[in-house]
Length: 196
Image (cartoon, rainbow, N blue to C red; front, top):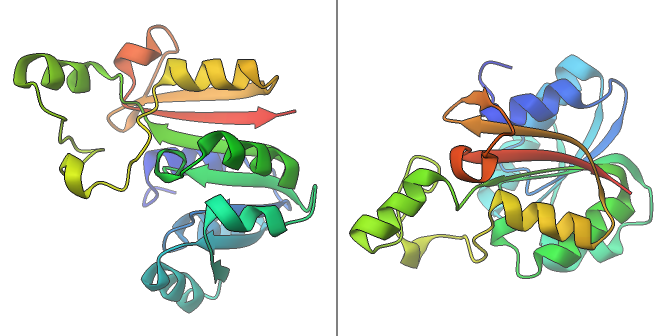
């Protein structure tokens, strides 16, 4: 798991062995391969980028090209134990609807996202007056796939409003876990495990 991105490593450690998983926005399939090879998971993927789909299929993974905003509606209720959406929520047109589909499709859902309220982002806006470019947000505002700038507190409010249970939450500062205290200010990245 050392080669996995830190948020993916958290997810991989917390998926029950032998589960059925749908990884939405699975990229090149790194998490799916980890789950298949080390957790005996039946992992399936949905990915928008055709090059990533090819890379995942070349790993022997079951991945189809699709769009989280439109194609999740085609999946039957409770067809997976977990639905995973890592660093993709902020790129969807209707994150609230995507979240509802995740919880409908899987009994539980992992969601990870960059926290746009991190102190470095705030400082960049305050002192520079410009949208930040950071390690986790590495491209300029005009070329970013991020269309919804979500914060830890925004996400917490959304799940509370929708009656969604937070079963677990992990917060990363750099590549290291940090406490939930002041996570909206201190965490660069958040991972939530949800159920309904």
